[in-house]
Image (cartoon, rainbow, N blue to C red):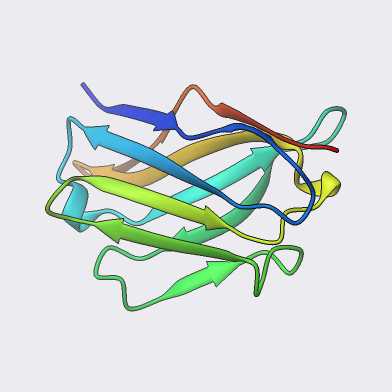
Length: 120
C-alpha cells in the first residue's frame, strides 16, 4: 500500500534552517508529482511547495518563496523540503502529499505529518 513517512521536524530558532524528508513507497514514485502542505494551529491546511515527477517544475506558496526549496531523489523515492530563514509563522505540522490516477480515478495520499516549531 501507499506509504508516505515524513521526518526532520523539530524546534528551531527564528532565522534557522531545517530539512524535511518524505520517504515514499507502494507506488511508482518517479511518475508522481509530490507536494508539501502545512497546517498551523487554528488554520486550514495549505500548499507550501510542489514538484513535478520529472523535476521540471516547482511551485511555492508566496509566503515561502525564496526561503524554501523542494527537491526529489527518484532513485531513493524521497522528496525533501529545505527550509531556510525560518520565521515563527512557519510553525505548523508539515505533511507530505501525492495525488495520482489509478484506473482513471484520482487518489490522494497523505503522510502522518511532522511538527515544525520556530521559536526563540
